Image 1: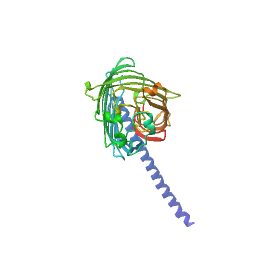
Image 2: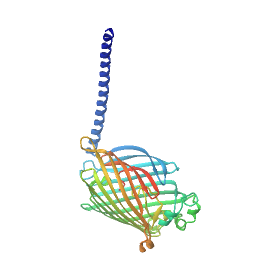
Image 3: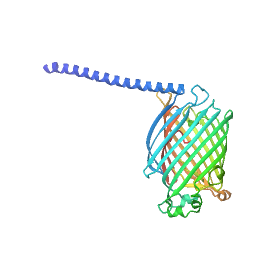
Length: 393
C-alpha cells in the first residue's frame, strides 16, 4: 500500500511535466507557423505592391556534356512600373555552375514588360569555358562517331548575348528586332576534331554578329509558366561582317507552342513544334542542334547538329493541391518527344533519323508562377539531370 502513495505523487508530477513539455512543443509549433504565415503575408504584399523579390537557390545536377556539377543562382522578379496593372512581373534568373570536368558555366535570362505591355524586352546571356566534345556535322557523325579523347574532345570557349525587343501592335500580336552576338573558339583539339574540315574552316572565325526581324503571336497567360494560350514565333536573322562578325549566313526559326488547362487549374498540357534552318557560311558552333536543357533533355548538347533541325514534344504539368484545396508550391511534369537534324540532301531523299526522348521532372514555386525545375531526361543510350529556373518551354 505504501508503494501506492509513492506512485501517485510520481505519476502526478510526471503528468505535469509532460503537460508542460507538450504545451511547450505546441507553443513552439504555433510560433513557427505564425512566423511562416507572416513571411508569406509580407511576400504576398510585396507582389501586390510591385516590389522586387530576390530568391537564392543552389542544387547539384548532372548533364551529359558537363558531368556532375554544383549550380547556384537566384531569381529576381520585379515590376518595371509598380502602379501599372496591365503588366506582369518581370523576371531575371541567374545561374553559375562549376563542374567535375572543370567547366565554368554562367547564364541569365531576362523577361521584362514595359509601358502597359506595349513593349517587351528579352535578353539571354550565356558563357561557357569547358572541356567539350565535337562529333562533326550530321546525324551519322553524331550517332556513329565514338566519343573519346582522340576522336571528339577539345576545349571550347563560348559566349552568347541575345537581346530582343518586341512591340505589341495589336492584342497578342508583336513585331520586333532580334540582336545576336555569339562567339565559339576551340582549342586543344583531339586528332578527330583537328581533321574535321568544317571545324578547320571556321575555328579562326569565331565571332558572329546578327540582326533580324521577329513576328510573334503570344496569348499565354503567364509566359514563364503558361497554363493557357498560344505562342507562335517567326524569326529571321542575318549575320554579316557588315555587323562586325566573321561570317555571312542566315538563320530562320519557327517556334509553335500551345498550352491548355485540363480538368482543373494546375493541370496543364503543353506541346511544342520547332524548326530551325541555316543558310550560307554557317560556322560549326551555329549549326542547328537538338538535345538542350530546353527541349530534348538527356542528350549531350552539341552532339547532333546540322543545317536544319526539327523537334516536337508534349509535356504534362501537374501542380499539387494543398489540404485547403488551393494550388500548392510543389509540382511534377512528364514529357515525351522526338527530334532530328537534317540537310538539303537528307531532306530531299526523306532520309531522316529520329531521336526519341522522354523524362520526368519536379517543380517548386519559389515566387508566384516562377519555379525552380529539376528534370531527368532519357534519350537513346543517354540520360541527364538538369537544374534550372522556370519551365523548359
